[in-house]
Image (cartoon, rainbow, N blue to C red; front, side, top):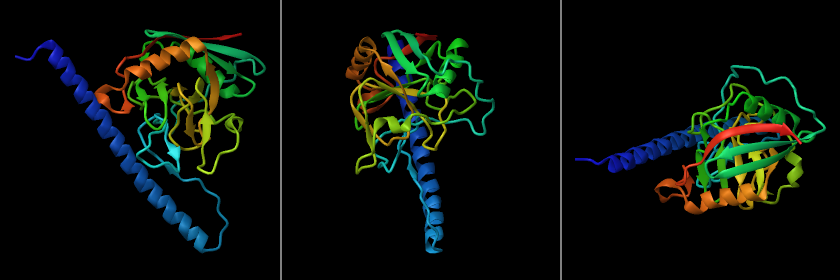
Length: 266
């Protein structure tokens, strides 16, 4: 007879296997799409056209964060995005000269994220809009990556990297991290909070990632906030506990739930 504990473990394994299958399907689709883009680009170049393009090579499901010119074996913050958008981006309602704080009350501690609306007005406005409507309350941080990049990803009401608010917001503040190196990447310092996206420009939704150790990524993820020292310590404790199944990318072994999210002007 199967005990309740065995049944829970079985369900957890099955969930993880489903996530892995979804991620593999995302990678297959990305490879097919990139092959088509590369073929089209080759035709244009052969005709003598001057083309400047950045081809997205997706690595994982998220929002989880996918990166340009990055091998599929290396994870990146990516997110599925509603297409076409089913609702409009919220009207601007924040003071674009002010600083705001997004406070996340979680089961692993309180996280405070400072956001500068002067640098990322539409991103801050979207988070204020969603938090005011309790969009993030009760959601899980669904993805932890401990190899290649060092991030905890949150903001998905579906809890699997496919959820979003029904609209997209534009990329902002991308030049703030400096010039990319020879590998096409910049350093997202520990404590940085940035938007996850589908890999395409201006495809952010509600998913975001918390960088808990310095991480190199292409400069295509809007850096919109800074995590406080207490919050960074809490995220590092989650990372130290590892990923379900012993892998380097998946649901955190120590579950993280956003119990309440608020955004207020400082």
